[in-house]
Length: 272
Image 1: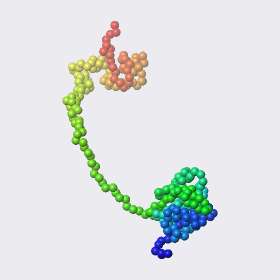
Image 2: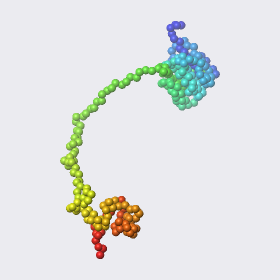
Image 3: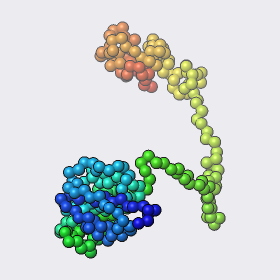
């Protein structure tokens, strides 16, 4: 044997009590693993009861799991496969089941994917004829080629300047052309006129404020009592029926406290 040829390390596990070496070599040969004749596979039976395989991390090239039940290999055992396999190593999960296998194929693919394996593929194993048992299907997956804790630089995408393609045939509308001459005129604000901006009525008052102030003087009311009427008893604004004898608002119509007292135009005219 050429000493320069590296010997392949193979681990075969099963939940059965017996797994012949000849069956392991026959399955590996049908799966296309080269150099399988030179390997001496390590076989572990009744592996469903094992929590951790007695192997170092990243020490095995290929793991072959042969199962006769639906629970093997479990998620925990699939995690052990990932631990002991070398980066880029391969795991084969072969099932010896009867009946429909579609749901079981998806279950096995999910388990190996959650364990960190890549590219799970279904393999048809019905053509493999063994003397002790027969296989229904298999799942093949690979462990990533990088080790845990390794790092690599990410390539930043090259900055591409933004290009704007303008169609010369496309007509653009000038916003200013939508405005008319009326829109461009400055709005005229209303100018306050009359007595609205003064404290007292002007000499030539035409708004009626002078007449109201004259009526208030005849009643003996001050400007503050007209503009902001208040009441100590709270009844002055209700009318003469509720006012006391010394009320300054006696004779005036009802009003709201705090609001300007409004006098009608015919307030001082005789009723008869």
